Length: 214
Image (cartoon, rainbow, N blue to C red; front, side, top):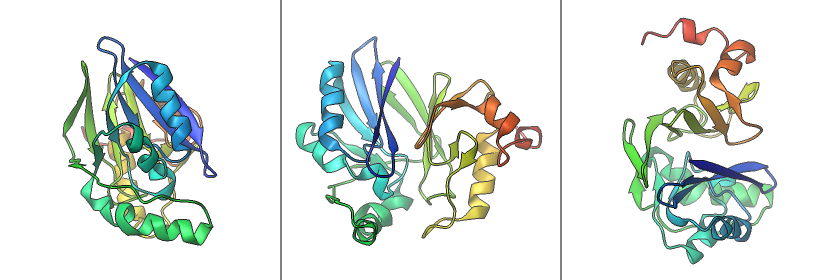
């Protein structure tokens, strides 16, 4: 497996290209902006793009979807609880922030907690982790978690946005913290980290793994 990243847009969001090197199949996770740049990343990889997986539908995670899909007619996967953002609220946020935004079509497939997604020989389990957004999910497999805006190096996603819920965030962090500590976390913003490091040093996560019932 190979994971490539481009940090895009005014919100400095991380878009990941996950490639199964055994079959040369790929998925694009959270194409948030600069669609042409992301199209080049896919093209330069030489892989066949099979799908777009969205951790959630905030503006900075879906802003490049429309342009990517003009080049690659692939399905967009999203948890249904984030449809309000995908269809309406992200466009309103674009007006509020004064940034360009093209409304994407879709989504085309619903994500659900416990669902297993495939990319070639790779398998990722969907973990529903609401709080930052009602439909936030993490894609977990092969020792990595593509966790969107759940957990960052040293911090967590905001819970003061429309439809955010700090109580849900607490429960999601507790559940996520029960993953193996060696899990490599690929967040929606900032650098790659590990669950062990965040359990050790992140004030929002430290100590949670010791209290979670497995």
